[in-house]
Image 1 (cartoon, rainbow, N blue to C red):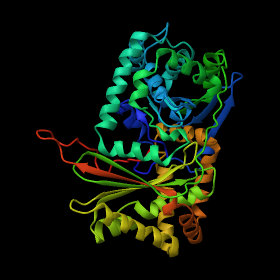
Image 2 (image 1 turned 45 degrees about the horizontal axis):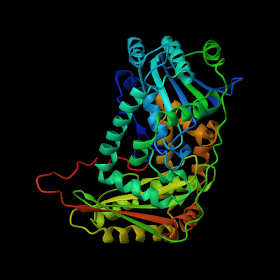
Image 3 (image 1 turned 180 degrees about the vertical axis):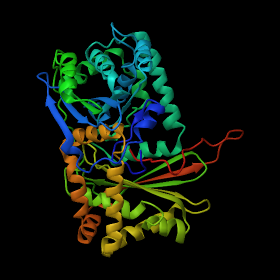
Length: 467
């Protein structure tokens, strides 16, 4: 995913993109009117089917999306969504876990899954004439998953080790986790997708079974299929395989939302690391409100490329930073955090970096952006949006993300809303959201490695750090 992806990054199960997926990325640019090419049907049991015919190459991506992520969990049982994702590969009475992978591979395909704050996705990428394989496998495990105690205990240890490696041994990831826990007090975005270690250690197989029965139902799921097929041929196959599954309950998706923040919050995380790290986060709306599109433009103005404001100021001129990044959660289900992250140059203090950031944010709220700079940002966003849909897989994920956040038809709103952002909008939105009282600041305080031990390896500063 791109650095400032408008998709939610995930707690993915070690995705490896094979040659098949490489070929998916060789498609010609997608049309801006993607939503006009989509067909939708809701089956009697509540399962929504979203189909996008694309005949450029004889491939298909088959994606099953469950409307459940870490936001659907509760205090004391965090991490259930991610744990269940792992357990979904343990098999059914019809197909064992090892057989599942073997069948997909023997048919020349690849499969995987990922969990985010808002949803969980399972996908297969196959030749178009093998789409029936994905249909049979996914309809089977939607209702017939076997959850065994021995598998549960083993996989729970795997998840615990995953948490150690990805969070507790990663200083930046640890800081981000602490920042979100401070910024969100009521919203379930308070806890990490992978869950707190204490919760992982104590939840039971019965917890997992109840979670599966509640959320893994046709009425709480939808399918996205993109590729080389004819809907009049594919839809009957889907209806036959999925249509007979019981609808199940329709879970309540409403969750508490944090009230307006009443003042700046700060969190400091002391970890063994080579360099400090600074993150400023601001509560902002998602695509359900027009201001979210203005924030998209602001994120681009601030830190998209070497000609962006923050890169020019902090990296090239003031020389206080190695790199800067922004993240905006346009497609989050609930209001999220607009983030600015900076890695200070060795020898520079976090305070210097913070002062430079404040100067640029103050400038954004007081001085009108020149039309040429504004148009450049809009062009960057429009190009990124269109060329980001070059692959079948990404087309499917974009449809899924919009559907979870609001409605897949909202894809058509993106470019028109970006185009109409004005300099006055930039100043107004910056003054409303990017202010000290609305932010939570996170600072990584590096500690020296213990004697005989190297500091934990960290991801590249180019890595996207914002979920």
